[in-house]
Length: 595
Image (cartoon, rainbow, N blue to C red; front, side, top):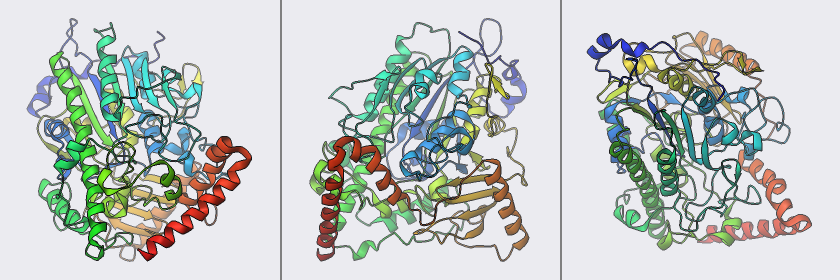
């Protein structure tokens, strides 16, 4: 195997100082140096900040909570507001506009596709953390959602993974792996070790992904080498589905509605120290009045959240199976665990998709969660999942881009620590490399020019030797589909497009107001202007493209589906099919208004 990354001298041997800080000691090898840890990365899909029990939620997540209580919870960790941009940064440590995933391909304007940074999949000038770990002697495995490129050169087997079983796109059904959740492409594309894969009919996504990961770890004869295991769950991406026995467990739990749940989670987050006392919240324009709903509609929406909670608990239970297996095989103590969500909770109502869903799924209350059903949390429950923050998936308010994240294991402070320093998904690759004692790539990787890492190693925070990895005057920019932000110290400059924003810049102090309720731009005019200039510099440095006039991500998804699904599947008949579906949508909306 080609070796690109050389190993560092073993700084973990400085145990005397670290012991006094409560840092877990790594086991030592025959040479007396610290054994490099196994690394398990667990990525949840569309979980809100407070869904996890350890982050203030009521959902039963005991196994993830146990990992949190063993290590460090990050209360100020930021991602992109949709899946593939986040995953591209997680894997490369490079801003998504520079690694090729400037936008979610499904929502990308036609004028942007193929422009520098907007390929919709990983560019050739970035190297993944898996490749760097693989080249340094790690065994590398991935199971679950990939979503950073399905071209042959971008599949996991060409991006640093020894073994892989992945869903290449944004998602699929959780009971029926060949079934599409939306008409994005002609089929669901699964790949195993770079080849087309056929999945079993007896399937539930969270269970299957963990089964395959355990199988990879056990089957590899190279037991003396550490492993890197990446599990990309589909939970809780739509369609929200879960085993009935777990769904029934939550029956009646959400009868008070989303506003009451949001307030309870805020109180718990304050109690845990995840947000400051006095944190306020803003009611989103898309959050309906629970008490104004008809009794039948309330029962339906209760069931939606019951399924959502059950899906999260099921994922946690399968994480528990993986943890227990590593304990039984003596690998747990030398394993670093990292858990995170790829973005905020899903708040779309899927009205535009109803004609297609009508022919492919049922949304009957009695069967929600089961095979053939399609659960949609909607904007009301998304506002609760994002509590205590504003906005959700796709928008740049804290509810869309501040996600739960925890790290535990060797070289990480033991105990239930909460870290409030500003951190970012690009920080994960440099952190994992330093934990594995692997040198980060420079400007060249095996003879190819590559983008330098933009993230910062979080090891000083994990060890308690620093209070921040960014200086107070260091800007951190962000953009996706016109929604944008720039962080500088405790200040956040943010712009959200309608319906959750007005398209204008606002300024907030997140140390006092993480709910983004009080715009302080008039109070700090110099900072407000300076941060706008910083954002312009970020756009220029990262080749961020301006969104076309009148751009709507929902409309663009529909337009892109015409060329990526309807025309390939139906050919010349596609136009007639689309007209029929448009008529069905009009009929469905009229029926809802009369109901």
